[in-house]
Structure formats: structure tokens, C-alpha cells
Image (cartoon, rainbow over all chains, first blue to last red; front, side, top):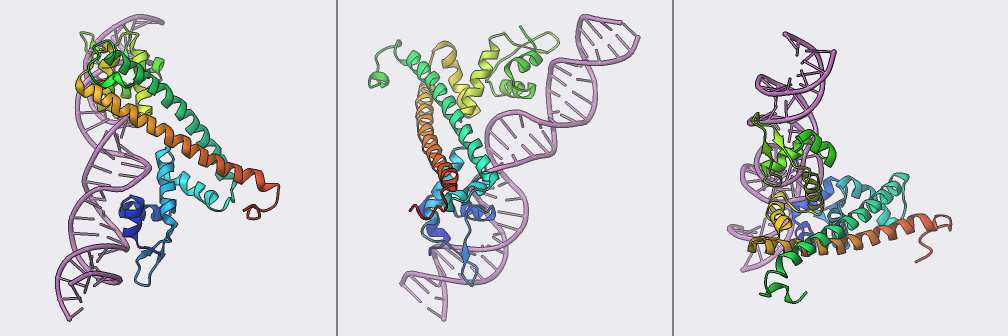
Length: 124
Length: 124
DNA sequence: CTAAAAGCTGACGTTGGCGTCAAGGGCAAG
DNA sequence: CTTGCCCTTGACGCCAACGTCAGCTTTTAG
């Protein structure tokens, strides 16, 4: 079992964030008799999972619903619906991002290629 | 030339958002003598471009820097650097999203498929 | 044993992209 | 003329995921 500071440095988030996660039921913590939080080593993975879900645009409430499924594969109806909904959303977001990336590429090309063969674009 | 209400309904954003865009130099507007905003029809496209960039995670300031390049292909050094940086960021974000989507798919599979085949733990 | 480092619980601050009144001005139709 | 819709500029509200004190307790290193 590790304390909050070590979990923070191992997982790359702040202690404030970890306390926030506990408060919002994303990451439960045991306590010492004196009240300090104790986490299993596996919490590092879990924190990284949480970060990934945040990065994918999920809200804390959604993550709180989905994490139990990730843990033990028991899914409520709410969780299943949310899983599908979020999966669809992510799918659409990927498509949008690909499109926007293409537009940026176009702009980059127009801005670098015909100007001159100076430096940056030679590799692409 | 169209007024703000029509641009709003055509482009699918609120008038509040359009005023915000002007305030942050994303979408300039001419004015009637009485002070009402006037936009060219091409503003509809531009608004949709702005929405796409927002959806891709760019901040207003970045969009303000990049939009001139989109318009006339004249790129400042700052704009070029930003273009590359944002393109890289979007690229990475797509990778992250694909990974997260795969994880969700895994969870969905575990949560739906083995349900009819008794218990989950026997698999592992 | 002591002092620094690390933890604890509030509780207020921040940031962005708008939503939402509030209080007025302008202009075509009946 | 006046009704009614659209427009204007403030200015405050909002929400999420933390950052950042403040004041106090626990743990650890020397």
C-alpha cells in the first residue's frame, strides 16, 4: 500500500486531483488509523485509466458509472447505455478530428510549399 | 449581407456566440449606420470552421492566430509554429481516442457477450 | 527528540465558452 | 402610431476539474 504522494508522483497527477477522484467516487481509498489515505499499487493503473477517459471527453459522473464495469465486468443497464453512447461519441469525435487535421494539413501545405523551399516542410 | 440572427440560424450557433467571436477577433463584422452587425454569406462557412477548430480542442486565441492563414495563406512564424503544434496535438489525441475506444469496446464485449455463457471468471 | 516533509480538511480562486437577464434603440406592417 | 420582433451593450451566472492558500496533525529522517 502506498500513500497519496507516491501515487501522485507515480501516476503523474496532483494529490489534489486524487482527493478529487475519491470525493467523486472514482478512486476509493483506505485509511490508516490516523486518517491518511492508502492505495494499492494497482491504483496507478486505475488513475491512468481515469486520465484516459477524461482525455476522451467523459465527465466524472460517467466515469464513476463505467469504472465498475471495467473492474469486474458487471454492467447495469445505465452503464451499458452509457458505454454505447460514449463509444459512439468518441467515434464521431475521431472522424471530426481527422477532418480537422486534414484541413490543417491543407493550410500548412498552402502556407509552406509555394512560398519557398526554406526549411521546415522538406521532410513531409 | 446578413444580420446576426440569420447568421446564427444558418450556422447553428447562438447570437451570443457570434458576438463572442467578434469580441475575440475570430469573426469581424461590418456595421450599419445604426450599429447593427452585418456579415457576408461566407461567414456561415467561417463559423463552421471555427466550430470545427473548437471541437478539435483549440482555444480562441489559437484560432484567432490561425484563421488568417486559412483565409489568405499568409503565415506568420507564430502561426506556422502553432499550426504544427496543434496538428501534432490533434494527431496524438486521435491516437489516444482510438486506444480509449478500443478499451471501451473491450468492456462492452465483456459486459454483453459472456452474459449468456454463465460466469465471467471462468474464462480467465 | 526535534524539525522538516508529507497529509488532512475546508474553502475560495481560475478558466473558457458561452447562457441569461436587464434596459434600451430601430424599423416594417397594420 | 404602435406593436412586435430584431438588434445593441453591459454584466453577472455557470460548470468542471482541479490550483492554491490556511491552519493543523502525522510521519519520517537525522
